[in-house]
Structure formats: C-alpha cells, structure tokens
Image 1: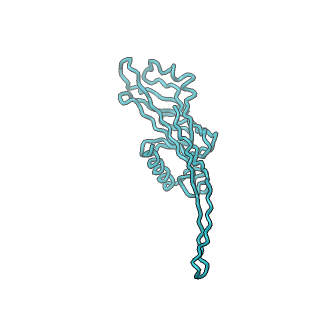
Image 2: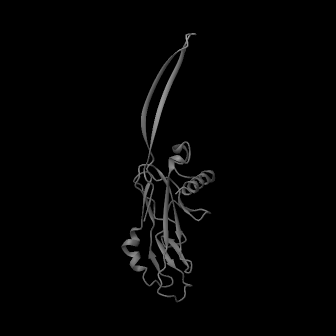
Image 3: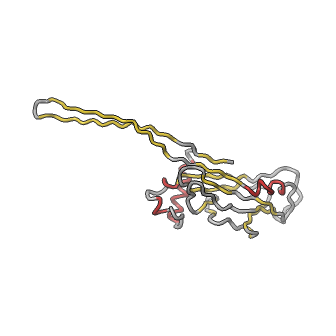
Length: 200
C-alpha cells in the first residue's frame, strides 16, 4: 500500500512596470520587464510496508485460533524530498475482537507512536527524507473470547497519510523539528491533517 503526494509544479509569471512623469511635459517614460519563474512546491511521498507480515504473518494468519498472535508491523518510510508528518488509521474487522501488541505487551504501541482522540495513530516527530518510523505495533492477537466462526476472510485495513511538515508552522525547525511535544502543537498538526485530507 502506498500513500502518495505527487509533485505540484506551479508556474508564476512575474512582471514589473515603472511609470514616470517628467515635469509638466506630460511625457511618459515607461519600462517593463518580465520573467518566468518555475517553483516546485513540495514532494511528499511515503511507503507503507509490513516486513514481518510479508515474511511470516500472512501465512500465520490462516485459520487463526483464539489467543494466537501473528506478526503485523505497519511501518512508514519517507521516500520524498521533504520532511513529513505521518499518521496511520487501522480499521479492524467489526465482528471479531482483536488487539495489537508490541514487545509481547498488549495494547502497547511502537516507539514514537501516539493514539489521538480522532482515532488516528500519529508519529510524534517529523520524518526526514529516507527516515523510517518504528513499527506501529508488531503483532495482532485474536481475542480468547472469540467463538467458532466461518471460513470468511477478515481484513485489517491499514492506511498511512503524510503531509509536508514545513507547512504546519511558520518556523519548522524551532517548532516541531525535534518532535511534537505540546498539546498546542498536536492541535495544529491534527487540524492541518484534517484540512489537507479534505482536499484529496
């Protein structure tokens, strides 16, 4: 699964005109100059991968039994040119009780991840180009309360989103360059995400 933001190129034509009046002769002296300037506005691109799921988890997930844990490790890599803030949404099967686990601890998230009230998991520092998050979690577990079901497949849908970190605050390095640390910063990040994703 990939979440991608394509390069947006904006062409800006700039022109300048100078007008002067010489005394009372009403003669106009003018000058015009123009230039075409091309600006590339941001390149945000991420890869969502699940290495352990691909290696072993997918096979383990066939015919799961109550209490069984299988490898599942959503991980985001910044493959674009700009620092990016990322979040993940996990949609669990509605009729099956499952939990996530990290380091064999139930409901523990990977380092750097936080679950916010909007239901998204946010990584608490911007990802620089080529950086990768810690896994959101490393296992999913089928509840021991699960009763006999059918052979119907159940899906856990994982979606990652990213926005350019430099656009959230006027001073990126001084504000969130070292991480998102305060409630005010979190409110701004979440609001920026919500406004941006409305346009997708």
